[in-house]
Image (cartoon, rainbow over all chains, first blue to last red; front, side):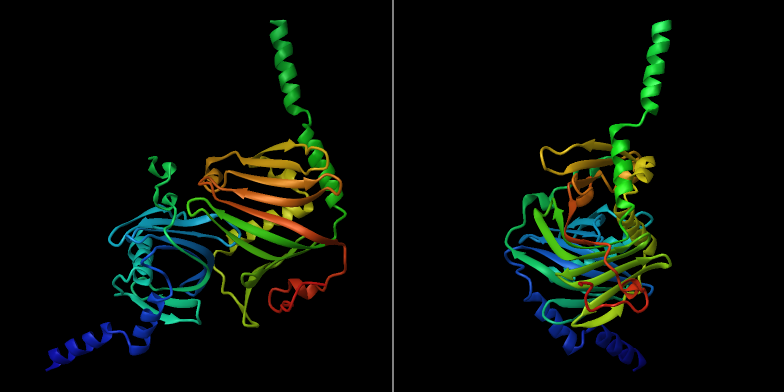
Length: 169
Length: 216
C-alpha cells in the first residue's frame, strides 16, 4: 500500500496541472512550427536570485533543426547553441560556464518550448499573449521571455551552419 | 652603419611623434570637455548575421559629466539602465509598473556603460592601451571615422572592432558601431542632441529614479 501510494504520488508529480497543460498547449499554437520560423525575444535568466537580461534569437526549421543565440542588451554574444530534436552543441558559452547547463538545461528547454519535446524538468506559465516564464527544476533557474518579433517561414541556411572559428582547436 | 643608425632613429622618432589621430583625439577631448550634460535620442540596430535579421530599438540617452549616465530603451520595451558614481541599476517598466532588476553580472554592464561614458567625455586616448586607433577623415561634409581594433586576443574573441562616426563641424559622435567576430554588429545612431541643459538629479538616482520619461 505505501508503495502504491508512492507510485501514485510520483505519477501525480510528473503530470502537469491542468492549467500548466493548457499553457503548453497554448504555447504550441503561438509559433508556426510546421513551416519553421525565426524569433527574437527579450529574456531574463534568473539564477540564485540574480537576474541576467539578454536578447535571444532563435531559428527553428521544419525538420527540427534549431539555432539559438543570446546577446547582452548592449550587444555582444553570450551563448550560441545549435541543435535538433536529439542533439545539440555549444558554439559559444560565457567564460567560466560549463556546457552541461546549456546542453542539459537550455537545449532541453528549447525542445520543450518550440518542438514539443519532453518536459521532465520544465514548468511553464504564460504571461500575456507574448510572454511566458519557465522554471527549470533540474537546473534551478528561471527563464522569463517576451516575444519581440516572429518571422514565419524557412530560416536562412546560414542559421544552421557552424561558423569556421568554432571548428578551430 | 651611419645610414642604418639614422634610419633607426627616424623610425623611432616617428613612433614617438604624435600621429594625426592623436591630434584629432586631443581636439575632440578638448571640445567634449565643455559638455556638462547631454540628452539625445538614439536608434539601436542589432544585426544578426546568421539569422539574416535585425532588431531595432529606440530610446534616449542622458549624460551628466563626469560619471552619470541614463540609457533608456523606450521601444520595443521600456527599461532604464543607470550608472552613477555609486553603482549601476536597471529598472524595467511593464504596463506602467516599475520594477528594479536584481542584476547579476553588474561588472560587465558597468564596463559597457563605462565605455559609453568614455566616448561622451572624448576619452578615446585611454583606449589606446587596448586598441589600435585609426582615423579616416570624412569627404566633404561627411563624418570622420575613428576605428578601434582590439590588440589582444582576449578582447578580440568578443569584439573585432569599434567604429565612431564623428561630425567634424560639431566634434560630436553621431554613430557608433560595435563589430563582432561572427559578423554580428550593433549600431547606435544619435539625434536631437540637447547640450548643457539643467537636469533633475533624480534622473540618475539608482534607488528612486524618475521613470516617467527623460524627455524635456
